[in-house]
Length: 354
Image (cartoon, rainbow, N blue to C red; front, side):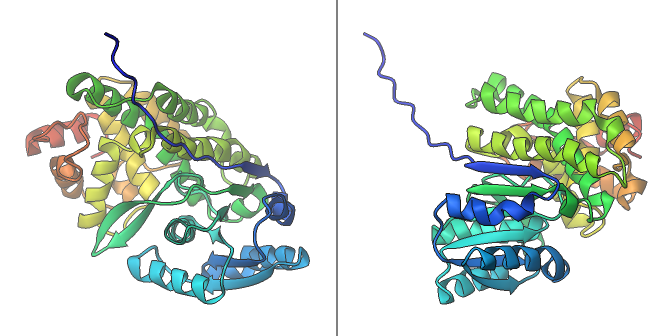
């Protein structure tokens, strides 16, 4: 007798993505097309609030929306509660994250909890969370990954993102490049632990990474076209998580290494920068082309070693030794027991990280 087929899963994707020069001017039309309710809450920060958020507010006001704004800080549980309280007070029909990664994360978590639509309007692209169903928050010094809303729409205006420091874009590119190691970890977990695997999600994540690697020489400071080249793979990388139903295609041993660095050397480097360096080492462990990963990061201007990250050799080794402890439910090349200090030092030395 044939077995009954029982698999079922929901996948949520952005309904519309606008990317390119000046597309923020279309945000009112986008909201009208989605038939969003009359009251909007913009979640933003001090820097972006004076520029992009005001522009978005004016456009939505012209489209007859009642617009409120909350200026907030890092992505934390406290700030999530503040955003949700304001959204309830003003009876917001939808939220907009206008700013960098933390503001978008706050908006998408609050949107998820309140069950209202959310639009993503990035003013920088330091990681691949612009269109993903996951968000990262700080909790007692630890980085936590939480379920969040997939944006109903994404408005990635290259002229806005271009104004942000180039370091942020390079970090976003490094985060996407690190997908190469994450996918190998996922494939390994499928072979050794029979973990569920989505070739569609893996292929999307790999396509995003390869798009950055193959065009690395064209991603440079002071070029808005660099944002155009990078932003689409960054968005696609986030969408791959929606297909997978988890962050698996974009987060493996290299992210675990980064999370330990967050603990032992907080504030030294950006998330994507750390993941990029981690991916060099993890690609070596997989027997992959770690030199190609390193060369792409060098070409973009992203960190490739401890000095670039602002950390010590000892901190790199410590992060490698303890990386396997971060997510014991997520099998990677680091295995269940991780690396010995000697193996970690040798790995970091061979790959020129220390």
